[in-house]
Picture 1 (spheres, helix red, strand yellow):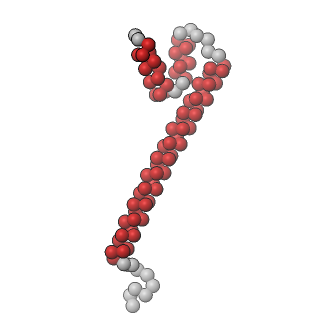
Picture 2 (tube, rainbow, N blue to C red; picture 1 turned 45 degrees about the vertical axis):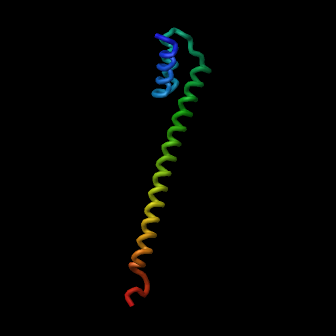
Picture 3 (cartoon, rainbow, N blue to C red; picture 1 turned 180 degrees about the horizontal axis):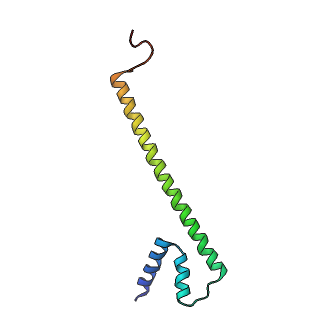
Length: 92
């Protein structure tokens, strides 16, 4: 196995499951894991999750905003074409 393959597997592991898999790999290699290493991995995972949640919320907000603008634009076009359909004094 080449270094590039190993690095690819590690990067894929981090991307899919976070830094805690690094701790598992170190444990399998019988490398002692210190408190600082464990805290860093936990902090990075928390940061990664918060960032992903924020991006997901922004994406849904952008979609809602775009749909609202499109709906308002369509309603404006219909009002311009048909005129008001109801209101005070229309039946007179």
